[in-house]
Length: 239
Image (cartoon, rainbow, N blue to C red):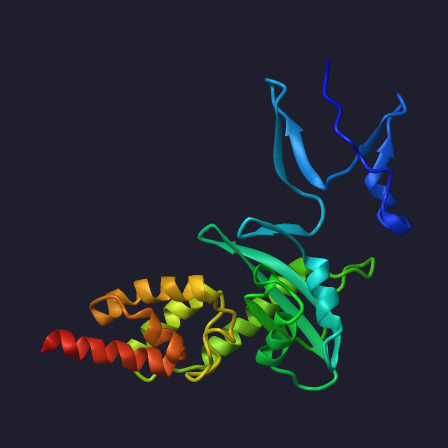
């Protein structure tokens, strides 16, 4: 005898009714939003999602929830988000339009009180407008292209003072997906978190000559300070 799994009859308030469907036999089913295909051996392979749900550090995240929270932030008029992956890690990039100039640090502080850590965007970018598709919905592919262009402009605007700063900035870009906007930008305000700081400390060994103490990075997480720390360690190694 087969095992039946309990299924809700619908959502409270009627939202998301398109998720529930009844087959010809009258059996109720729930659309999970996963995309898949049936393999020759009858196994079902999940190939992705048909909605904007992503997985970050093992947690399922709805991009729309991040967007809705950002829209409630002071001066923000609209918000959009997308996900990007590098080295097996998924990062969230959020964009906002606003009536006044706003800073990523201020928006990050606003989100930190309202969202769990794993839902925090790795990058928050103010843009002149959000690109829309022909049906009026957010065009996430065009948004990704827009942000990439802004990143190139930022990279051109930041000039490292020496090879050490250049090496720090390159690792910064590699880990955060965007170059530092200035030598004094805070690593954590730019989207860094403790795990990325650990990776930064380890990868800086090639520049400093040995592993850079994590606590020193946490105490002064800017390109200028981290580069100075690397030079300090280099001098110690030469003595």
